[in-house]
Structure formats: structure tokens, C-alpha cells
Image 1 (cartoon, rainbow, N blue to C red):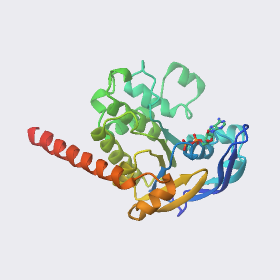
Image 2 (cartoon, protein in one colour; image 1 turned 90 degrees about the vertical axis):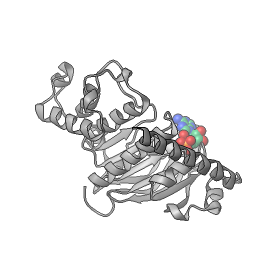
Image 3 (cartoon, rainbow, N blue to C red; image 1 turned 135 degrees about the horizontal axis):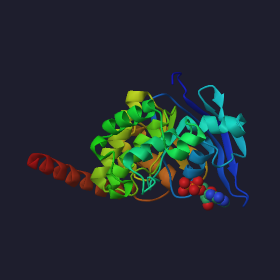
Length: 277
Ligand code: ADP
């Protein structure tokens, strides 16, 4: 997708039936190839924001545009078609465990094939070729015929990424992609997501609880607090003052020191492992 603003959100408000105002007028634009790391304390509205974009949660007010298409103006079949253009990657991977890696990737095409095809799981050869190419890209081609439940967490997330890409999306919404993974695998997955967004000029929003990981792999950070954006800027500007504005009065220097020490240990581990390989 081309255009300076691939995703545009204007004045998004979400009031739940409980009266809770989870989003209080959020505006945000994301360009092609740009990855936004969405951070903020629990309950800040991060999941609500992501879900309002593909309308899994219905916004109370405001507008969302994907390119020139206003998602908030769509209903029924049009909305279903538009949702195909939005790839989702989940923290628990959301794979069909008893299906093979290949079948899971092909399930990303389900919005495109006729009902009888999806029922018999017969996909056009072009879809199968595309799925192989994606598995190659995420480093899993030799695992195509294995069942999803036989894979490691990192491999499962790679399947999740390939499945989202099989949709040929114009936008990726990514919810805590590394929450179930160890630190080293988390970094590999973040690196892969970043490379793929750059290669395909895909805009992405990543809901990410790990600030240090976000700082390593994301250039732009948006900080939500109590339903409002309280920080939007380059990762270098995310200093202690900004972190305090987002998270409150926690001691961010201590958190950072611990994380930096861990990152150094992990890097040493990686070097050692590479030396052995
Ligand atoms: P985050 O993802 O940042 O943890 P959420 O978007 O899950 O935040 O939640 C934002 C606020 O909206 C919270 O106060 C939460 O309790 C509330 N909320 C979330 N989902 C619902 C819901 N289905 N019904 C009522 N309130 C909700």
C-alpha cells in the first residue's frame, strides 16, 4: 500500500456498556512500513484501541481509515472484505493445533476462497505456492507438514506471522507477540516482524508490554494512559520523564538497569552459542 498515512485514526472514543471510557479521543496516523510500539500500563486501553481498528470492538465515536477506506463507515460484507486487509498476530499464536503448519498458513486465505474450497481444504495452487514462499521467509519450510502442536513457541509464532501475511494484508495488528516466549526467541520474533514490515512496506501497531524490547526494535512509541495518548515520538525521546508520564511514579531507572543487564547476558549467550555452531 502506498500513501503517507496508511492508517489514520481520528478522535476515537470507546465507552463500554459499564460506563467505562476506555478511549477518550485517540488520534494517530501510521505510515507504510512504520511500526508503532503501543505501550502503557494495564487498563490503559491498548487492546481496546487495537480492537476498535478492525471493529472487533465497536467504537462509540471517531473514525478509522485504512488508506482511503473508512473502516468505521462499513457494515456487513464490506466490513468482512476490509478485515481481510488487516493481518492479526496474537500472543498465544491462535493456531489450529491439530492441523499442519501448511494448513495453518493456508487458513490465512480462507477469506478469499469459496466456501466449498475451504470446506474441503482445497486451495488454488497459487495459494499453496505463496504459502511455501512465506514459510521459506519465516524459516519453517522444512516443517510444512508437521502438526502445529509439535512446534516450539518461537516456531508457532513464525507460523502465526506467515498466516497473517498469507492474507496479503495492508496493515498488521500485533497483540503482545512475545508474551509467551523466552527473551532470546522474543528478540528473534521482533526482528522478523520488523524486517517483514520494512520489506513489504507494511504499517504495524504492536501492543507490547516489554518496554526494553520495544526500544530495541521499534522506532516510534505511542504511550497510552487512561485512554489518552500521553507520548508519541521516536524511541530516543522515551526518557524517564516520558516513562513516568505513561506509567506513573515507578522507578524506571531500576527497571531499565535490570533489563540492560539481562540483555547483556543474553547477548553473551548468543555469542557463545554461535561460537559453538
Ligand atoms: P489494556 O489493553 O491497556 O490493558 P484494555 O483496553 O483491555 O486495556 O482496557 C481499558 C479499560 O476498559 C479498562 O479499564 C478495562 O477494564 C475496560 N474494559 C475492557 N474491556 C471491557 C469490556 N468488555 N467491558 C467493560 N469494560 C472493559
